[in-house]
Amino acid sequence: MTHDTLPLITTLSAALGVALILGIVATRLRLPALVGYLVAGMAIGPFTPGIVASTDIASELAEIGVMLLMFGVGLHFSPRDLLDVRRIALPGALLQIAVATALGAGVALAWGWGIGGALVFGLSLSVASTVVLLRALESRGALDSLNGRIAVGWLVVEDLVMVLVLVILPPLSGALGGHAPEGGGTLGWTLIATLLKVGAFIALMLLGGRRLLPRLLWYVARHGSRELFTLCVVAVAVSIAYGAAALFGVSFALGAFFAGMVIRESEFAHRAAEESLPLREAFAVLFFVSVGMLFDPQILLRHPLQVLVVAAIIMLGKSVAAAVLVKVLRYPLNTALVVSASLAQIGEFSFILAGLGLSLGLLPREGQSLILAGALLSIALNPLMFSLVAPLERLLGGGPELAEPLPRRTDPLTQLPDDTDDTLLTGQVVLVGYGRVGRRVGAALAERGIAHVVVETNREIVERLREHGTPAVYGDASEPEVLVQAHVARAGMVVVATPDIIDLPRMMSCARALNPGVEVIVRTHNEEEAELLGELVTAVFYAERELAQRMGEHVLERYGVPG
Image 1: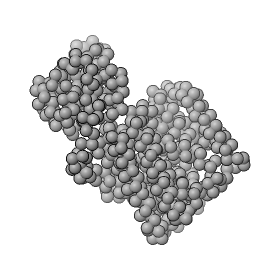
Image 2: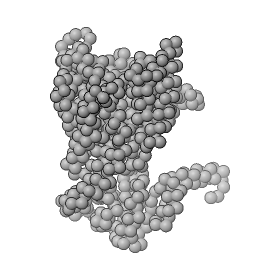
Image 3: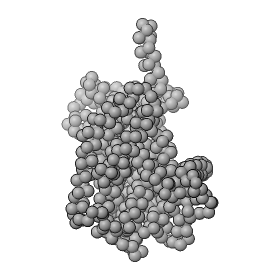
Image 4: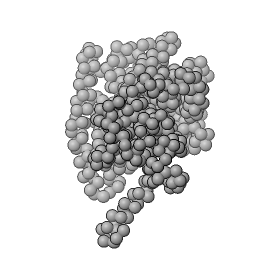
């Protein structure tokens, strides 16, 4: 049945209510809640019986969802994080997009589609979901690991490429067999005009936005009103996205992305992300529900073979291509498998691109349904892909050649240079991990002239440290040969700055065997881990305890009470 008298309220209540129920069901089945949201859209969509929500209103709500989703991506986009993994993320993502697009476009052409529809279809299958990836890595505690940083950096490159595709696809649609852009003109001039307008918008945001938006947030924050601050953040995201589309012809997605990226550089970035999170997640749910409303389940019966081909391209073709590229770039097998599992799904950008292709007359309705079917299957089965990482690593790592993917004799980064100053290798600090915490520890040591050797699993970081004269070794500190190269036998202290403590017992065993008297300092996230690690190491720093202690000392000092 339909409710024409109150279409907005009907759509909101049906979408959020059914999404809540099916989201809970999905999580109980150990599936991403996103699967439940997509199925909820199918349940209230026009292709299934029961309540039929307004697809027009749902599509407008979805546009707001796109704005807030991309605003959130911009808030978390760090050029520095991308630079840390640029040598694998940049070439890897570009080549993987090319391979996946070629696979998707190839099968679409074989099905008799036009070149424009085939291109949009292939591109839609090439980009993974930011939401699914981040939640999968967070649930496994791998977001801050090397593999997590590579996967996120890889996805950031994919997102940037897709943003560019969203910009240049409309002016190219006429040449690709779709609707020609309004206003006439040659293809070359249309493309140049579009790129000029995009360039003007980006320049305005980077030059003017960087100055005005942080000041606006600061001005609103001075009033001390939480709701005003939240309203300001949401108004900035939606208004800039709308203004970018109205004045510069830029997509809502690109406008919102740059709004988030500019705000990220302000001192209120963390608060902006925190305050806007509930609204962003609510509209993200509406976005996925609206996408599910477009899915026709009959596609599973009419074209089951095509659905399986699409799922195979997403989960096998794209994943195998990513794993091979990671190995070619000389990274370990575990990294290759984790990255390939992370990318074995598609999501929000695929839906946005499919919707644009449909509106431009490039992608047939059948293509959108196939993309949605592929997304449902790949998102639902993504946890299975992660569960296969360990068995595949054991299976593929059994042979003598694959067991040691980076032979240490031929990799110069796994051993210190011969000309390393010997005075730096006696009584030094061995600093394991050079992430957010490790960088600060290393800077403090360097400022005070304390010799230290960094052990890091990110090759780019090791290369950069060596360029600046800091001794650094590439490898896993739980392996004896890595600690030997860091000269732990002559070290005065080992500082473990990585958040992952799984390999810590093995690392400590190796370090104590090489240097029984070495002091060991580690960080941890909770009190239980701190108590457990206290038996293995010299000192444990627990974030909440240290913060409380420092705040207490400051208060006591302020009131003149001796500590």
